[in-house]
Amino acid sequence: MRRTWWKWGIYAGSIVALVASASFTIYCAWKVYAYHQPGEGATVKTENNEYHFVLVPEELDNDYWRLVEKGAKAAAKELGVNLEYVGPRQANIDEHIHILEKAAASKVDGIMTQGLTEKEFTPVINHIVEKNIPVVTIDTDAPTSKRTAYIGTDNYYAGFIAGRALVEDMHGKANVAIITGSLTASHQQLRVQGFKNAVKQEKGIRIVAIEESHITRVQAAEKAYNILKKHPEVNAFYGTSALDAIGIAKVVEQFHREKGTYIIGFDTLPETIHYLQKGTIHATVVQEPYEMGYRAVKTMVDIRKGNDVPSVTNTETKVIRKQDLPLRPSRNYEVKHD
Image (tube, rainbow, N blue to C red; front, side, top):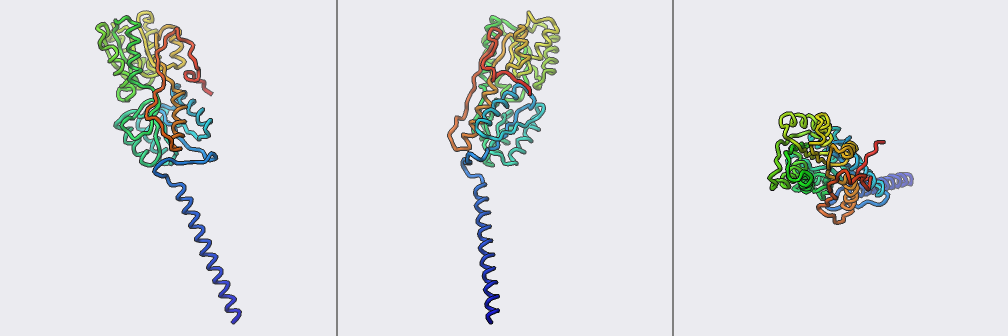
């Protein structure tokens, strides 16, 4: 009889221990699950836990976007953030969107990208935000989307000051051809519209042609060549993406028309500065890509911590000419490949 009670005691104790262990395991699992579920507001992390952000550019191996990357990585290092830089090798909207969707599926803490077109990008950005992943747009805004903030150039204003610079430098008389990186990308459209509005009251300024380069030197050069063949009266070019003025400059030199053709472009890539120093390019609109990347990461950290951030932060934009060289601070304008 004593043996029977002894056995029953062991069985009972084992059952109690098993139940207690199971309960504790379930409790711990629930706590972990509850901790990792995204809440309605910000996700608060301790100093020992890194945020994981993704920066998706329009074109991965592009000197302009390398400057954005440099600024973003500098802020990430300063703030202890894990930053990925991933995007299409060459501008491709379908691939760009696919990368954004993959980043969202991996449940990163924040995504920074462009809002290239309203039709394609707004639904994607909204879908990402609905998953409690904040989105900050850089360089190109998606103002009707649910993005939290935009950091970058006022692209309409940038186009407008380009137009006014051309009017001033050409004394109000020019036959102008516009070569734009994209006819559909919103930031390129704004740069064209700002330029048009800046020159529309000038009776001596005539816009002869508008062509698309697909953000490549080669196509910018091809379009410039065709324009000069078809419209030899053209004596001024406006390029709206970083590579357009470079392609135009090559063709203008090929035609030996450096002295009779005015070129204004965008950004300060090494080739742009080279042509600016030579006098083939006469002016260029300066943006601050490094600053865009730097501020985007800092803004994203503030968002994740639940801090209020401005909906729009416009970085500085200005027109420079040969006499304004060299540029300072260099961090905004120089790319050094490792």
